[in-house]
Image (cartoon, rainbow, N blue to C red):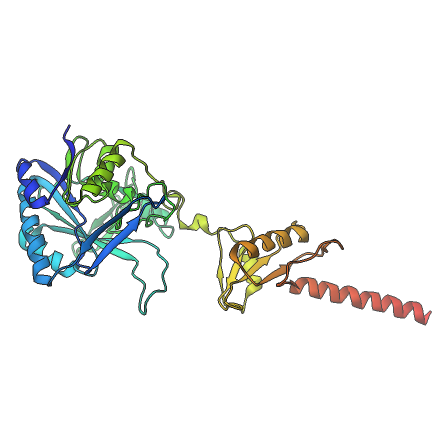
Length: 406
């Protein structure tokens, strides 16, 4: 087993690795962001940082090109390289990879898509990064990963085999009798180049406080695609060691290199005690998080609000705030006592420091006389209750009138 983390400049340390011995190289190099990246661990006992300053794009390109040229020499003929980048330098990196590996060996531009929340600047919110996938030759190793069919896929698309006609148009394949051929065992849809993988939650157990730390799930997918067990994986800018940890979990050999002694020590600690955060989003899908009753939210029609999916006390937050605090909204649930709905909303007000909240009452239950609502909480009766109450009032008035007339 070749499992080690090396401290030093990868340009020098890669000279220690046998040429044509590596199956996969993944690198997450400096992104040409022109700033210092700093982050502390959850206990705030350690601060990790690295500088990403360059005098010019030419200097950055030269730095990276000499190292990628050395990496190519280390790859086996059926090996592959994945280079992680963002908008800061993707144009530079793509040009270097085309030059070193040849445009004909470009395989994919993977878009890593994720949700992040920020209102820090004017413009579109950045929610993806790029990963360029190149092979050393046309005979690169590749293991197809299958994913579930789209919800819009019909049964014929799954069951019936397709072929190309004389015009190269996709059509159903038929036998001599004109019957559509059965497609046989279906594994699903081959993985595409847009990967919806959650960014690491700030509270994730996997987080170690290193700037630019990537999720293990992302690296595991790359490793599974282009290597087999006991293959050798190299990360020449290993940072917190995510690639090496993923390789270990998948029974691959690994070599990690980083200039920072602190990063090397952190990587070694993670490798000795791997911690992986499972993604419920990937397991269950985004739809599983939509748990709010559409009928309940329909009562907010005409209001501008953001639905809240994962909170017991709140169904929505109004777009407009009140005295610089959020306006929380709760809809009373079927068979829920009004006092319980009030209690849950009151707890949410306290925890979210809300000065105004709205509770929409949907049944005829009333608060006990000794119960009071929190200051700032307003209870509105739903339209159905108002109509029912109005009808009851008219009925009572009618009975009273009849008694008076008699």
